[in-house]
Length: 182
Image 1 (cartoon, helix red, strand yellow):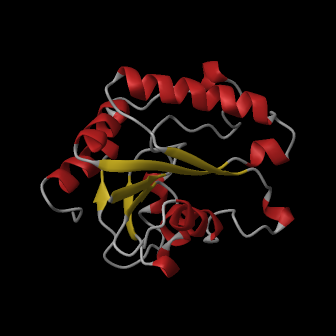
Image 2 (cartoon, rainbow, N blue to C red):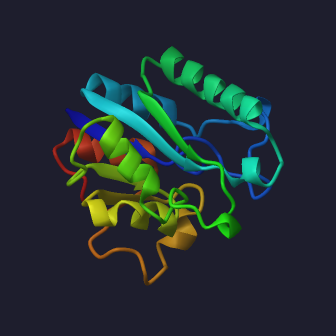
């Protein structure tokens, strides 16, 4: 089974410092839906792993988050793709949970749910916490310059040899060519 893990905000859709708090605020980054469709066509199981502390902060509830994800799933489906699962962390940093990226809790849950070894599994993100979350499990981080990516690329804590791509579409093109390296 081929598996890929994607962050949501800043990778699939435009990010917002004020959080994505309603379905109408969720807007896909150009090319991201088609990139997910391409991943599906390439035989990947597409999993989204996303911190959603807006729930823990009381900015929106789980019903609203589910409506946002329903919109995303329908948009991906309309483009010919599929998201196989969405894993969320609803906690704030102050709650010190095990699932909030950069901690590996969501990635451990993905491995368990899919009965998969995550060694070598690509994990695409735009922030340092996305890149660090699965390292202990052997994931292969990939950085996109959308979202927070242009700031993240300059961070000295980015794991060595992390390939950098303009956006998710470019990362998928690299995977399609057998790469995943810049």
